[in-house]
Image (cartoon, rainbow, N blue to C red; front, side, top):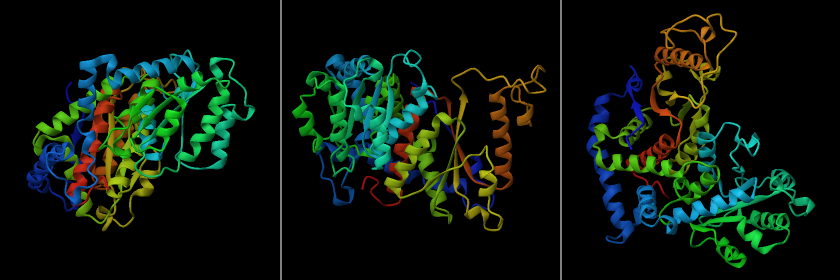
Length: 461
């Protein structure tokens, strides 16, 4: 698979920002050394070939080669591999239920949420079973302990009636994700959910077993519960992979498979970026360039947050996932900025003298091709006039299709950003699909680790 992502930093070197391209070039040898450290020294430490110093504990770089290892195991053993067993288990669960509840903490759930938004129809949960291709609706629980929200969920699941489901529309399943490194506040929700599922299954122990998929770490307190119930659909939360970096592990792949997402393409995308990361020098390495740019902007300007603008709402969930990643690993905040609203204008500082040091570096995430055909805007006065779809200076109001309107809005935004000297970088993908999403997720994880090392901190601690 070829590298599908593109990084454009031209708009980051705006006059008055105090950052020059030569500074990123000078950072190249340091970035190359960090890449070698992650891909070579860290791997040897994880394998136990060399000792791990206290400053690197915990060392959780297992996500780097995880896509490659999972795909290799599947290609060698197929049905006997963990991926093969998981695909069989999720395929069976799909035929039995119309809804799945995923229980986990906020870091683990942000990944599956992002995959649902990116790879499924925008209103997936609102579609009929036929329109969903017989794939179950998906609900996420455990990110907070709000009593009314949990009671509302149990009511939706029919738990308060205590009756057995009589049709597939009433049947639901459960995915439990728990790494188990530290006590989880979500553990208290497992018992009421299991009780509700037992009632929904009519008290049938075999049905209860078949309706639960577990993704557990070795030290998870849920291991005993899974053993007691005799559940066979149990998968491993990989060692040396933290919650924040688990999106391409079983913690993200089990929900993705239930949604009908092509997990092989996701993993191939992740593998492609890891291979690129290991092989490319800093001057051509997307993850190193992205990390280096962010580092320079953070450390030579007074502003600490970053801005995130996705020009496809399918990537809005990825922004939420990236926010968890930055907050957990770098203690950085990510501001979601909607460039199609007045929020952009209100965010531009009035004091132009200090503006350059008070605006967040903006990450514009651009998609070039959309999943559906362009919507024709019947009200447009130019609806039937032939013209080039990307006319320079096209106004939003005169666009013939919604895609053209979005393109015109982007042009206007770029002009406004240039005029206000707002530094920004553009990460683009050809379309929002599994290969591109897998590449983007792995790119952001790798660049975050590199940033942590540039800061002199352990990004996994």
